[in-house]
Structure formats: C-alpha cells, structure tokens
Amino acid sequence: MAKIDIKTYDITLAEVDKALIKKKSEEPPRHYLGMSQIGEECQRKLFYSFRGAEERENTIESIRSTEDGHNQEAVMAERLRMVPGIELITVDPDNPKKQIGFSLLLGHFRGHCDGAILGVMEAPGTWHVWEHKSVDKPFEKLKKIREEKGEKSALREWSPEYYAQAQIYMHEMRLTRHFLTVSTPGGRNYVSIRTEYNRKEAEAIIEKAKSIIFDNWVLPPRISEKREFFKCKWCEYQEICHDERFPLVNCKTCRYSEPIDGGVRLCQLEDKIIQEDILYIGCGQHLYNPALISGVMLIEHKDDHVIYSIEAKKIKFANVSTASFPNLGSDFDIIYTSKDLRDNIKFASGIKKEKNILESGEVVTGEKKKWDTVNKIDPRLRGV
Image (cartoon, rainbow, N blue to C red; front, side, top):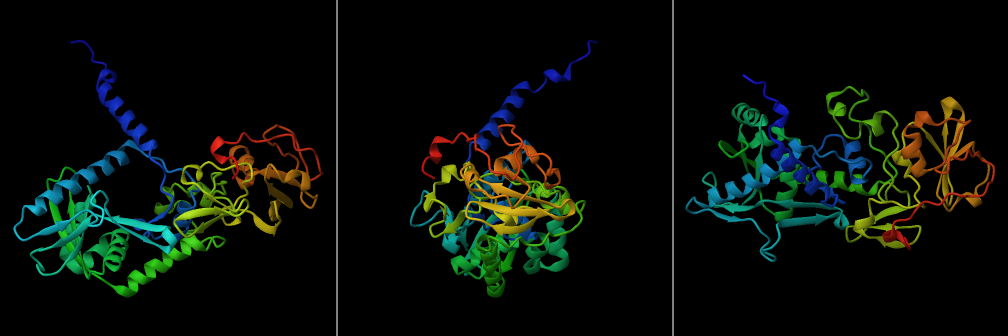
C-alpha cells in the first residue's frame, strides 16, 4: 500500500483558517475598556491593555471559539423563546439594529449584554439580565462548583470576569438578578446559574475602571513578581511587564494623549481630537507615557522630551520626538525616538552609553547636531 502524504489533507480548510484570520485582522482594535474584561485580577494588565501597549495575538483557536460563542448565543436565545411565558429581549428597544449597550466614565468604559429575560421558572415574575457563554473544559467545573457552593455563589467562584460583568450589567439595567446560561461548544449540553445584584461591588468595579482609565501616570502593581507565575507566563504583556520591553508606538501609549468626554482621546500637543482610525498608528511627535516604561527612573519632564536614568549603568537618556532634537540640551548621555526604542533597542537592558543608533544609523550623543532623520508620516496624521 502506497504511503499517504498527510500534508495533502485539509488544504481547503487551511485556506478557511487563513480567511478567518484575515477577517479578524481587519476588525478595528477596541479603543475602550470593556466591561467584559474589568473583572481581570491583574490591574496592570488592564492598564497596558487600555493603552494598547502590545498587540494581542489572535490564534485560529481563539477565533473559532469566539465565533462558536456568538453562534451558540443565538441558538440558546431561540431555545429559550420556545418556552411558554418567557419574554427575551436581545436588542436595544430604542434601536433594534443594535445590542443593549452601556457607556460609562466619559464613554471609555463600555459593554454590551446579550439581553434581558422575564419568565425564568426559578423566578417567573422577575426580570433578569441574560448572558450566554460557550465553554469547553470549564463546563464541568461550573457544574461542580454549583453543587458545592450553591447557585447564587457559583458565578463568583467560577469566573471573576463574568461575575464583574454581571454586576455591572445589573447595575446599569437597574435589575437585581442575572441569569447565565452556559453551553458546551456546539450547544449539546447546557446549564444555568442565577446571581444576585450587589450594589457595593458594582460601584467598586466602576471605581476600578475609573482608576485604570484616568490614573494615567500611576502603574498598578504586578499580580506576581515572578515571571513564571502561571497568569504571567501566558500574558501578552509579559515582556513589557517583566522584561522591560518598550511598548508599541501609538497615540494611546503617548504622553500627549488624554481620554476626554465622548470616549475619544485628545492630543494635548496639537489640542486636537485623535480620530479612531489613527489611534494605533502613532506619529513622529510621540513620546512614551513614562508609566509604561519599566527598568528606568524618570528624571524630568521637558516640553518636548523626557529624561530617564538607568542607575545600574549610570546612564541618562532622553526620549525625544523628531521635532525636538534642535532644541535639546546636553544634560543626558544619549537620545532615542520612541520608534527607535521599540524597534531597535527593544528592551531597557539594551541601552548603552557608547552607542546610540537612530533610524538614520548615525551615532548621536547629547551634543547638539542637525536632525537629519524625519519619519514618514501616515497621510491620516497630517495636522495631528
């Protein structure tokens, strides 16, 4: 019997996966803090996430899982509506083309719930917030927790993220009960749990979000000082948090960027609102928000540059913009644009006094020299 080359299998399905990844990559990044993520235990992770410090890798497994979750939500809604006496609302009554959504903290803290339901048999006269989740291995864990801890305590024990989300949605909808349905992938098995509203906890969650959004210069503590801690090991911000990696260069990591009313950001340098489609591009005027840089000590804020020191190496360096160089003094050893720090130096440990390679390749010290390198500006950034 001839040997079968297994590499010839599933070629078409491999193309399907490529199409899914391409479709996902074309979706605009979330520019607000999500109510679905505020229950995350590590506040530093939320701080980095809200400021777009690193790209989040979308694996094909996560894309398929998300897609299945949306599909199963629709399936469960249809199944619930089959029960006599149940009323289920899954769209905004004032705008049937949209989900039920919430916006807090000047529009920078947002979420969308799956619906509101009346007529569940456990409490038929009470409106509940309705959410549906599709999970794999955690399904059996939830069933076990429900048996051991009771229905009302199960959600908090099972998923702090879902619990915080439930509390916020109840708070905003002014409802006192939450009805969560949970299914296995494909919807072949499912369970439900109800959760009670806790006003103090809901308000504390909002205060947590407020701190993440507006405390722009205060970096929250790590969840663990150990890089190998299991929650740090798989975190997309591990290198920035533990290894002193420089963050992405974009408008959200810039010191001139400020969240303002309307869920938008203001460029304080130009006194202009930054449009959503350029938030993740960044420009030649970029200077890092010092709270995002690890492994260095902030020395001084200047009008157009920031000075840091690395005590162990006895180095003082300046983070500069492409426009600031002609005005620089010499109270530091070395200069770097944000782009140079991210792309070339990469980690704070890579900074060396004797070498300063800018995009032009020129070695530059703190002495005044002609700025001969100008970044290519994206057309959408003209005037910003």
